[in-house]
Every structure is written in structure tokens, then in C-alpha cells.
Image (cartoon, rainbow, N blue to C red; front, side, top):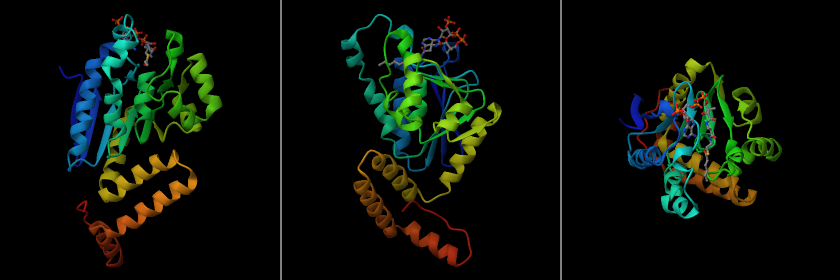
Length: 256
Ligand code: HXC
């Protein structure tokens, strides 16, 4: 049985469903390896224009698998090379949407924060409880969380291990959209379809510039933005989109 199930809910859209319900989708080394290999191949697949990651109604993912960590030391942690797994998601050029229901804790919250858009069901809970285990986040839980919700709310979550609700996460800027629990995946699919209907080169440049620019000084970021914006003027899809607008017809994009 696959630990990550690949589905194609709409044209150009891939959905990855974490499939360890008996362990609240805890991210075992085997599950992470499957996730990585899906991301590597979907990143290269031209037909795919958006990727959704989801879990089940109880848990998006309850974090790294505690059973697999209880008796290992730092050398084994290094040997596992987990950053290669995260890197496959981090460097994915396609938009990634997390559809979160239930628990998104520890590495599960970090997985959600690897996405470009987070859709959360009303019952979702986001938290970084690592401190309760005598460790701390190791895949962006201090850095991405602080950038998303601000240092003071992040510090409260990280030092107490207490989760926040989907509503609190939305108000803090950690969640893009809240839905009733049963609508989380359909909403993520609707967003993915909307993105898939856009010119792929423009989508890829927007994603890359937003992420790279946020970590650069403003002047550098604005230069990156300008360069990418000008570059898109060379695409076939730009000509097609503008011509279609002027001819009052819908455009057909080829990703060129
Ligand atoms: C391994 C886990 C697990 C986890 C749940 N399970 N979370 N197994 N690793 N992270 C297993 C339980 O052991 C149990 O197995 C089954 O899933 C159901 O869990 P319950 O606790 O009975 O369910 P529930 O009462 O619904 O509570 C759900 C929960 C709780 C709130 C999510 O399970 C929980 O607190 N889990 C741990 C969350 C956590 O601390 N995550 C951070 C991990 S560290 P059995 O066999 O008993 O049925 C991390 C970063 C590491 O993510 C970074 C290193 C650098």
C-alpha cells in the first residue's frame, strides 16, 4: 500500500494524499521518500500545472514519526539526509497547495508551510509541539512560521507547543482560505484548476520571484521582479493573452 497516493482530480492537476491514517499521517522516513519522489517527477512533468497535498479528515500530518526518532542520534539524523526530501518540495517550480484538515503539527505544519497556498478546514489545528519532545523544528518551523505570523505569535506557539485553530491561523496570515471541513479538498482543486488555466510561464515566474524576493533586500527584489516581468514579454502566451483580450475571445495557453 502506497504511503502517498497520487490522484489526478482535474486536467493539469495532481493531488498527493498522505496515506498513514493509523498514525495520523506521521511523516515516516518511508513516507517522506515517497513524497520526495512524487515531487521530483511531478516537477518535471509538463502536463502538471498545480500540485495539491492533503491528508485525511483527522490529520493533515501529525509531524515527524516519533517512533522512528526515539532512539536515534544526530549522526543518524544527518545520514537520513532529510533536507533532500524537503528540498524536492522547496524547489518544485509548480504551485503547491496544501489542503489541511485536522492536525498539522510539527513536520506536518512545516509541510503545509512548504506550500504556496494553504486551504484549511474550520477544524484544522496548526502547531509546532516539538518543544514538548525536547527538540525543536528542523524544517522551517521557526523561520517560515515567524515570517508568516510574526515573531511574537510564532514564539508563543514554539515555546508552549500549543496549536492554533484554522481561524487564528487565517487571521495571523498562515492560511490563505478557510472552508468547511468537507470543502477543503474541493476548494483546493478549484484553486488548482484556476491556476492551471493561467499561462504556466507567468505562474512559474510569479512563484519564484515572490519567494526569492521576500528573502532579499527590497531593491534587489524589485529588480528581480522587473527582470522576470520583462522576460515574460518574450513568451508566446503573453502575445496570445493580450491578443485574445483585444479580440474579445478566450486565450489558449501552450506554456511557451
Ligand atoms: C508517530 C504518531 C504520531 C507521530 C500520532 N501517532 N502522531 N506516531 N509519530 N508524530 C500515532 C499514535 O502513536 C497512535 O498510534 C495513532 O497515531 C493515533 O494517535 P492518538 O494520539 O491516539 O490520536 P489522537 O488522540 O487523535 O491525537 C492526535 C494527535 C497526537 C494530537 C496528533 O497523536 C499527537 O500529539 N501526536 C504527536 C504530535 C507531535 O508531537 N508532532 C511533532 C513530532 S516532531 P497507536 O499505535 O497508539 O494507535 C516533528 C519534527 C521533528 O515533527 C524535527 C526534527 C529535527
